[in-house]
Length: 252
Image (tube, rainbow, N blue to C red; front, side):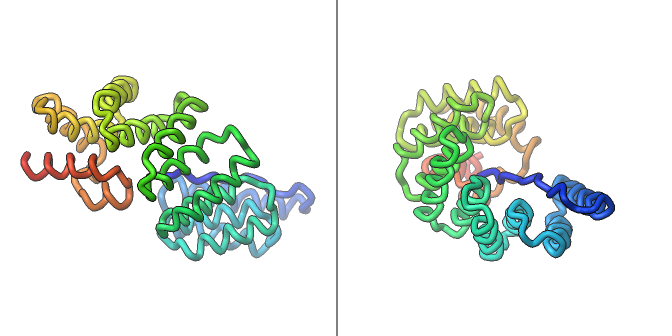
């Protein structure tokens, strides 16, 4: 689940009345985004772009709203425009990489994440996202290295640590994977992703009681983990982890 980078920049040279109107539209766009109303957010970004067509952050932000609606090709067009306007800004490359991943274009996504890392060598999101793209290609050792770097750069980046644990499970490093999953659940008790992963991994090893208790917690936090297709194609767990969860759900 790659995260999007959002731009805040609004030019200061506008007349004060226009500046106020633009800032109000921007605030409304972010409010709609935070409420999960991405179509409304997209409309606000479009209104802003009519007034400020040369603002790269606005193009990138509208792209994010479109990605959230799975309008990936249109989002990529927005990111392309943002990059044309600001070729040295890392965020549009990061965001375009996310959209490319959604289309299964993992090599192109990796190229975008590499560009981010040229511009911002210590960007943990770029490492995490590049790990996701490497995982999409089945390059698990490369993915593990990227996830570890992301987690080392940002120790509170829980999803990078989670992805690292899942990738370790995929390559058969089960004990290390379980240890990391347990640590994450202790640190973040409401982390549904790791509760669900721990459920599957524990079930496979015969630790049924602990598996069941984690499952109750996971589903109470996020019922999407009952949907194997969502876990496989949207959350994009590794195949071995998906199979373990499928077996648990089937045999439960």
